[in-house]
Image 1: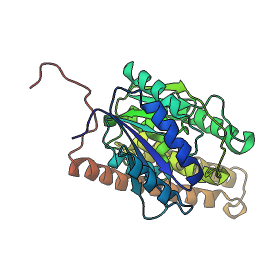
Image 2: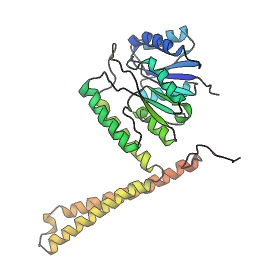
Image 3: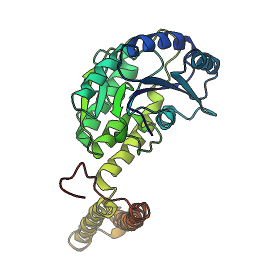
Length: 317
C-alpha cells in the first residue's frame, strides 16, 4: 500500500562530488513539508565512489534510500527503478548534478495542489553551452510540442512532479524519460509547466552531449507511432503503402507516355526501376501493417486492456 507522501527520485552516475551538498539542500527544502517524504537515489553503475557515499547517506538518515544497479543502464532505466522502489503518491524526479535546485520542489508541489497531475520544470534561463546543449534542445522541444500537442518549453528538464497514477503503469526504454509528460497526457493527466532555477555545474562532467541526439530522434519516431497508430497500425502503414502505390502508378504512366508518345525506350530511363521499388515498398508497408495489427490485437486482448481510459463515472455500481 502506497502512502500519501513525497518521493524524490534521483538517478546518480558518477556524482560523488555533488552528493553531500545535494543531501543538505534536499533536507532544507523538504523539512518544512507537512507530508512524509523520502529520497530514493538510484546508483546507475557509478565508478567514482558514489556507491560508498550513497551508502553513508542512507546510514545517516532512513529517509534517504538507495538502489544500486548492477551496471550503467542509462538515465531512463534508473528513473524507472526509482519509481518502482519508492512509496509516495507524489513522485518528484531530478538530477544529481546540483543544476536542478531542490528549493523548487515546493513550487512544483504547490502547483500540483492547484489541481494539476503533472508539473514539468522549465529551465527558462539555462546555464549550458549555447551550441552544444541549448539550441538543439529548443528545436526538439518545439517539435515535440507540435507533434504531440503537449505544450511544454522544456521536455528535457528532469525536475518534474507527478501524481503516482500518471506514471506507475508506464514502461520506458531508451531515452524516453523526457517523454513522461506525453505518456501522462495520454492517460488523461492535466499537465502544467513551471519556471525553475537552473544552475551551472560546479563539479563533475556533463553526461549529455551531441552523441545523444540520434537516440533521442529514434525514440521520437517510436513515440510518434505510439501516439498516432498504436491502436490502428494498419492505418499508419497502409497510408504509407498507398502513397507508394500511387507513386508507382504515376511513375508507370510517365514511363508509358515516354515510350508510346515520345519513343523513349524503357531501358533509357530509371522509371521502370522506380516503379518496381515503389511497388515493393507498398507491399512491405501493407505486410507490416497486417503484422502490427495482429500484434496490437494480441497486446490489448491478452492483457485485457481497452483502447480507452475512464476518468470517473456517475451512478454506476
